Image (cartoon, rainbow, N blue to C red; front, side, top):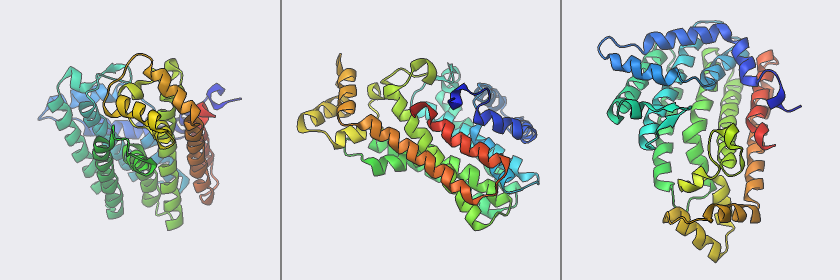
Length: 333
């Protein structure tokens, strides 16, 4: 039986196991996103937070702290911090990408305006740093500040590398670490730090989050060319139409003959796309085994995530995190 067919998904099992902590996180988030001076802040953040989502990143912080035996109050602060950083990046991303929908709802920049989205995102970053300081741990501040910088670096790198056929897998990995993995790895690592976990355990938690985030993004990029639209919420080929150089295309370009490279240059670099080009792109991906190679990369990163956990205590939450890594790649097995 696949994980999609089970009655409870791994993130749902984590939510149930950590229900008290997540309730405290939600309460703290709602308290700290309010501003008496600027009511629009609460309106805008409530719209985005109210759209739902798995709250995967704060769950990972609570799970890491739980795995390391932490019983104090500050895991909640750090989980809320991680969610504020994530929400701030979503607000900024929707402005940069000129997005009009997120999780099936109009984006904040569409309902309000770009200026409000940027400024409220900045406000949430500031709130996140206030929460970090309240833990009294300089190491926590160091980790989350570095993650925030890495996220920004990844976004800027993506701007410069997008639509450039010279972009290789090394650059792609840097972008993915910025877009996705940096906050995953920081979320798990700070859970170990607040629990005063041994250095080897802290590193294992970082490695787990890093590998899980990379697998997560590779799967998302792979499904754009071979997923079910109803399941993914995206139309097949959206990344192609938006001229994004994701891993399947990078692999196909690396193996391309001169004529094939000219096709990618026209469609991706120049943006001259015509009827039938998506079908030709899919043919070239299949010809060079780019989809299968990308799938194997995703599975390998999920395996790295699971292996990293093996040095950590054998507690119920460890198996839940292992299951989560399997779940992330289940759709491409």
